[in-house]
Structures are given as structure tokens and as C-alpha cells.
Amino acid sequence: MNSPWSIRLVRALFFSLFVFIGITIALGFDQPAWTGAVTGAAVMGMLLLLDMTLEKVTLRDFSHATFGLGVGLFCAWLVTRIGIFQLDYFQLRPGGEALQNLVQIIIYASLAFFGVTVALRSDRDQFAFIIPYVRFRSEGAEGEPLLLDTNIIIDGRILRVADTGFLSGPLVVPRFVLDELQRLTESGDGQKVIRGKRGLEVMEKLRGMSQVRLSVFEPESWEKRDDLSVDARLAHLARQLNARLLTNDEDLAKVARLRGITVLSLNDLVIALQPQLAPGDELGLSLVKPGKDRHQAVGYLADGTMIVVNQASGFIGQTVDVVISSVLPTTAGRLVFAELKNRS
Image 1: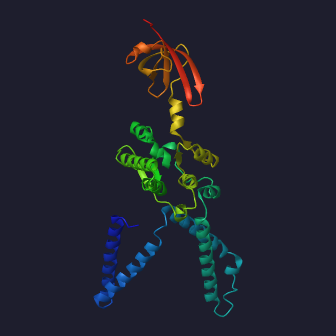
Image 2 (image 1 turned 120 degrees about the horizontal axis):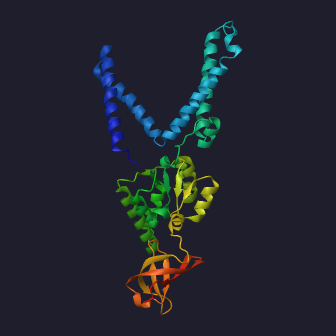
Image 3 (image 1 turned 45 degrees about the horizontal axis):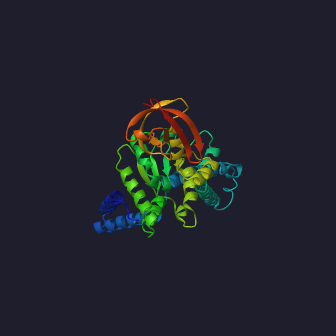
């Protein structure tokens, strides 16, 4: 992956700075300026090599390593405070002071190493167990990111929800989800190509919304393994980022909830927002097509609920007042029947 232009600019500025510092030091010791320039460039070159080697290291890894380093050094300090280091044991031996310093260096280096490696292998929950009063998370749902999966992007309704301003927190799309959309567009299967293109179009529209904070998350190397399913990587990433998972996939939702992840579903939202209709309720309804029986007409509420109106076939294309007569639950949702309020 190419470095962003900002990183390249920083590298160029620091390269110039190191060359300048090298020249300044060389002239201060009455050495040729070119030796200082070469030395400064060599030092910066080694730093650039180290930077490229650590390119996959994230800020989370760095914070974990720093914490582990601090714990390791503190433990080493405690060890070197025990009696054997405070007595004259080392001083009474030939070269004892040098031996004492060497042993202390080994202890500090060893415990620092183990502190860093153990911290890098630990996740957020283990840190919370070690430090119970420090939570590496945002308080409240407003600051928690929303992790989008593939089907919620292809679904497209996220655009209308985002446009209303009801979504709180930044939207996060993992790189492997974008890769899956790209694979769909290149699959050669007509239906998959359409779904993939629609998902990429939704992403472009989300990027263009000023009220939406959208970011693409670059996963760690292990999360790029092809032997792991996208669902498994999404569930792990949601825990890692302390994010809420936005999905319409019921299987993924069940697995995520078992792992303690907050799951949001647009399907559940649609059901929750359906108006509660009961027999006797009155409403205005636009009749748009004939029903199954010749005397029936059909209209739809704003949420898509279908209402079948009896004795209304002559009013198709008009808006009429109706009275709900019955509401029948079905496997697909509910079926609502109504009668004309004014049969005339």
C-alpha cells in the first residue's frame, strides 16, 4: 500500500532536518560538511527502514506495548530493590560493581520484553480486568462507532436513515467488507454484480453526506486471512473497537449477541416503527390497485403495510377514509382488512 502524501511529506522534512543537523555537528567538530550530511542521511535512512518495518503496527498496538513496557520496568525496579542488590555482596567481589550493573540491565531488559509481549497478546477486556477503574471505551452509545457489514450496505436503506440524522457515532466499514463488494462486482454472476455495484454506490453516497462520519478500517494482518469468514472477522472487530454492529443478517446477529456485542438491525427498526393498528381505528388511505376479490381494493401505509379494503373497487385511484376491521398476523408480517367509513 502506498503511503499517504502527508506521511511522505513528513519523511522528507525530517530527512532534510537530519541532514542539516549532521552538517551542523560536523562543522562544529571541524569536519567536512559532506560527512555530516552523509551521517545524517544514514541515520534517517535507518529510521525510515524501521518505520516501513513497523508499518502494520497500529496506535492500539503502540499503546498496549507502552503499557506493557511500563509494567515490565516497574517490576524490574521492584526486583532490583530486594536485599541482594542492596548488600555489599557485589562490591566484595572483584569487578562486582560491573557485575551488579550487568545483572540489573538483564533484569530490566528481560522484564521489559515480557511486559511488552504479554501486553500485545492481551485484549481490551483483559486490560479492564487488570485495571478495573480504567475503561478503554466511550461512555454512552453516542461515541460508539457503528460497524457496517456487507448486507446492510447492499440493502441501501442505511442512506435514508443516515439522511434523517438518527445515526449516532461514526460509521466504520472494514477494508475486507469493501473487498467483498469488489469481488461481487467482478464475479461474472449477473445478480452478484448488481449487488456489488449497488453496495459501492451506497458507499460513495455515504461519503458525500456531510452529517455522516465514515471511515474505512484497515484490519490487522490476521484479520486478512482468507480462511476466516467475513462474519467471524466482523464479530471480532466489533469487540476490538467496542463498536455496535449494524446488520440484517440474523445468523451474524445471534453470534454477535452471544459475544456480548450490541447489534442493531434495520429490519427490527422497521417493525418497531410500524403503527399499531387495532379494529376501529380510522385513517385516510390511497387505494392503488384491485384486491384478490373483485370488490376489494388495496392501499399501503408509509411503512409498506398493505391494507385490503372491502367493497372499495370503485374507488381505486382515490384517497378515502377507512375503518380497520381486523388485523391478522402472518409469517411475512401482518395482513390488515378495512371497511369504507362512508359507503356512499
